[in-house]
Length: 126
Image 1: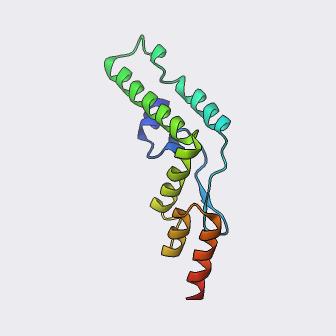
Image 2: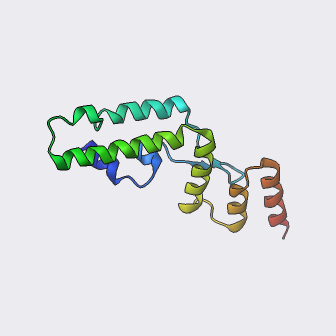
Image 3: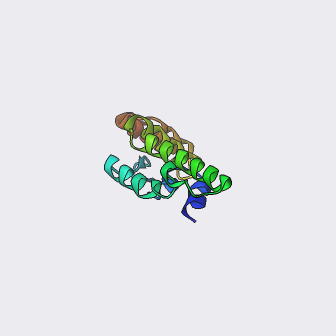
């Protein structure tokens, strides 16, 4: 069931069934999903667990739906806001082992593109 899948997801990307971030050639996180795509994914999934749909459910089913609804809402809130999604994407990349070395983690955590490139060049020269 869709509600159970939503509740079992470990991150906001899989909650909304969106592609996962990757790294570019400079080992920076890349996630090129627009706010409109996040909103569309949210609207598509929220109809399975919206509060208005709970009238003929058992208490357990209604509770699962409420949990899924809150997870979807939180995922949409974070991934559709550039100020929140940037740090979330960077943290996800580091937590999931895409940034393999310390220099790559430093570059990812640093939001300044020029400084990120300088850090990587310095590390390569060492």
